[in-house]
Image (tube, rainbow, N blue to C red):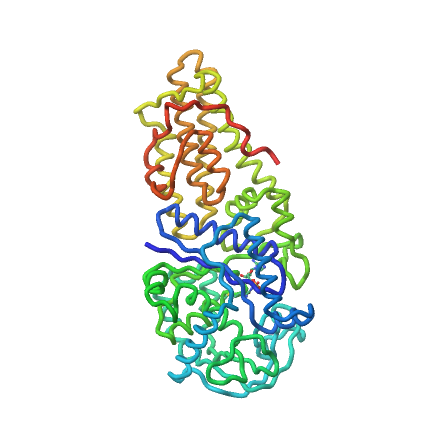
Length: 506
Ligand code: MSP
């Protein structure tokens, strides 16, 4: 089964910050977990390069918009590289192919009568690239606190209201469609009011940096319609049917987005797809925000964002990913500080995982000359829980709970530490070397399974851990499920060395 997962495509009006880094890292982690549990995966990220906001920034910088986009989209690619994020597609809305496909989408909607022309008078927020009705304004600002301007112009509208009821029906019939549950409630409550039609164009007199409407060259496409289409066009929509069939129609599709852009993804996008008679994404997951010290959203417009590169250079990229995956309940807002990362990493990775690895390898090096002691056919608590771990992780990922997946792994590692404390192999070895050997061997097998299951989060550390255990695992040929469903798999012919500290205390 194929699973296609996407981040939002980011505006190129600024550089990546900790909030966008959080979103991209979490999407990568989810994608890697899905690959671990057996899906064939594709992961898209990219940049949203049209619209008034980008046009304005380019103008301020006195460069032409495309030059600006090239530079800023490169910033994103470089940051993701630095954060060791591997994606399959980096989508840019300034691709030629994107323009053609968006135009063919609009032509289809226009030809079938789903687009009409009307005068529009109201408030526009450039920061959010969104129109707001007068009653939504708060003290003269947008609901998100940004400046708005009064606008009166001719626009083209998409008959979104026509698809309101079909969308409500779809949400009700498909419990996985909007997640987590509280977000689904939000969307349904939004849909309990009559839905207005959506303005999908901007006159060129106001903004020229966009895709011209195929049926009226004096207008460009509203940037959100242009941007949302990326998810489908990237996998062949309107240009490569077989690919689209494979990676959209027949695949599981999940959009991971921040809760601030959930309505757009859960209402605008699905109604457009309904009008296009195309399958809707299977899941739209609204994640929470990374908060600053005053428990407010870190944001570019407030200028209180952290530079992810600086943070990660101080705490370590895998420590950062471990913290955001395991400490933050996916979907909730969460405060962020380096102190919080340090506490979590020290507790789980240094004291629990690292300690267990160095203790057990040290004892094997010392008392068994590095020869891996044989295990025992008898059942014990480690073996039983260790062999159940893959399923627990899989079940957690299938319900979008990576934090629960991590907590199962850490509970297992804690149980192993306790087990080792109880049996005290450093003493037991003097009375019953065989039994002490079994305790150590079981511990290493448990570490092996933990390392495999943590690999979506700790890409490098987990392979180093497996290396320390002399376990070579080629995930392209051997599914994780297989190596996690057998217990004594470590190679007995190779010498175990006392492991280097893999997770030094921060
Ligand atoms: N370009 C649009 C998305 C188009 S998708 C078809 C856009 N871009 S954005 O650059 O503003 O950022 C988007 C994502 O970053 C959103 O999902 C938003 O929630 C996320 N974040 C921005 N600040 C954030 C935090 N402080 N914390 C977590 N995520 C945050 O919107």
